[in-house]
Length: 301
Image (tube, rainbow, N blue to C red; front, side, top):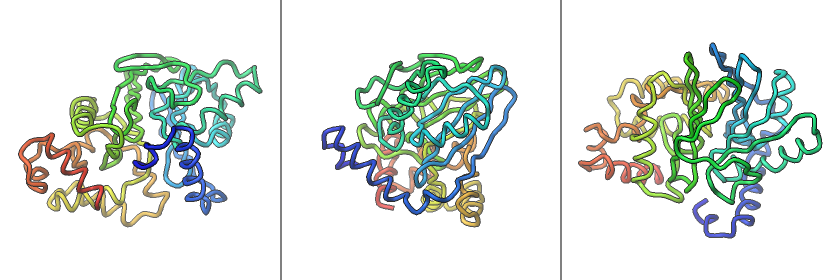
């Protein structure tokens, strides 16, 4: 992916699309289970895509209006929309990589072919590389999904325009983190700096309420937990979750998502860079230096 960033965007998107299509070919005929979290005010349907991606349908229970996060497989999204009988009119794009934004064009065309569906609004960071972007958003911009409030969190590093979406009501909270925060891990620093990831994880996401549900862009639980256990072998929370992940099949590992902000602060070494145990592993004394050294170690893990 880092080499692809040196190519013209359209060419890199085509090559990325080929890579993800080929790598997930053996899974194409396998039915992926949609897993549902029903809360008082919102319902989130986790829709597996490609090899290890997640798409999310976010529904306001009161109005039945819905938004979809990173619909790389739009036909599958529309199947779930029809099954649930909800009104989809919003796309929340976390970043420009094909496995997240690559379905925007096809979904837009489906809406053009079905005018009675209404207007499709595509949200994302200010980035020409995001297809069909209609609503450019920045830090602390807000909008609604029905009666749910969405606040945009600018988290550049994995890409320069990465956005996380914090969705809340008086009763419920969820954050859609794309490739910034994974269960027990974080994204590679493709277009940014350790300072930016530090700001994203420690300054922004760690400050959200501990009971906020965390919906990430990929199922990477096992490898992330193995790395975390190596860094903090005495961390009982990490050890217990690693045992669950090792004992589970693919569907079981997918079921580990959503995490919570509180859990991530207990198990995710990238959110624990101020902890002496984590700093000692990389031989650093500041949280920023620890962030940089940890990511370098994870890249080689």
